[in-house]
Image (tube, rainbow, N blue to C red; front, side, top):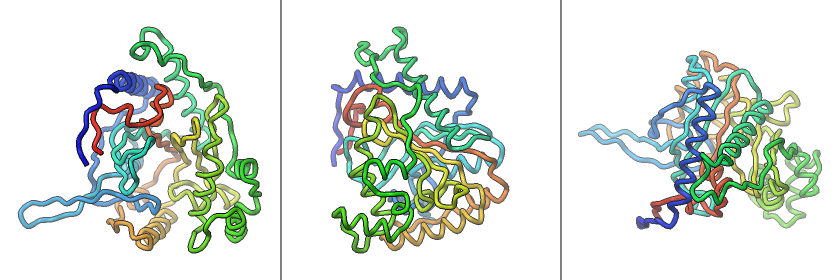
Amino acid sequence: MKIQTHLENLENYRSYLAIEEITHEFFRKRKYLRMDLPVLSPSLIPESYLEVFKTEFNYFQKKESLYLTPSPELFLKRLLTEGIGDCYYLGRAYRNSEPNSSWHLPEFTMLEFYKLGINYLEMADEVLGLLKFIKSRLSRPSFGMPGNKHNDINLKFDKWEKYTIAQAFEKFTGITHEELFEEKLLIEKAKNKGYQTKNATYEDLFSQIMANEIEPRLGRNGRATLLYDYPWELASLAKISADRKTAERCEFYINGLEIGGFCTELNNYKEQEKRFFSEQLKRKQSGLITHTIDKGFIEALKYGLPPVTGAGIGFERLAMTFIGTNSVSELKLISIQ
């Protein structure tokens, strides 16, 4: 790898800074508290679908493993249990073992925010409000992006294009509700479609079908697409719905790209602890780094996480949709490749 400069991206970078400033304005107006948080932690929330960066603190004979945080969740939820109220973080996050691509870098900017007393579908309104606010501010000549060439944003944020996951699978793949929520039936359907099912888990096949047959078709009709009510197996930190088949989780897409997601947060510490050990076991089976489980997170939940919904948005991806770039790298003045 080497360090490269990209002054050809200066106009895009200035546009990115404008969107960042507008985002802070949105949260100030809605009385969220901005959080400044660490990016190194001695323990993490176990998540089986991502790899982390591991480093080490050294002082004379003392050595301690530390990890770059893949999200600020473990810090923000601690503060929520202590009464911090509505809050947000806009800063760095890190995920390992994913190649650089047009929509992902291992070091990226995460927008994560939490609002008390609402559920996942009410948070969908809050997120739509953010998108609408950014577009309206960028449309003002006084706050237009450099050169004013990006101000005509061909997206409407008056409402979502909405599908439950079951509706999306049936519409775009022909997989029925019954087949989606029954593991054996989904595996059989995937096999008939030509997917490799040997040693593949339900989660593997769900993700492959989503990536190949559904995601490229979302957010293509002039509005962002909202998917909601995911199978409970795919929501390690979300509250389970009353039907016991789905979790209160949403994702949203623009131009075929996942921009972010949100969920009604699980606040049952016993259930969360059980899921943590399940996720850690999956990490071991997948050969991922075995990091220390954040038991302090569970202890914090024992004190009572209030009813709250959290959202996480890949901020560079969000900026790309407003600036009109095709790659995250087009927003950067420095890259490591």
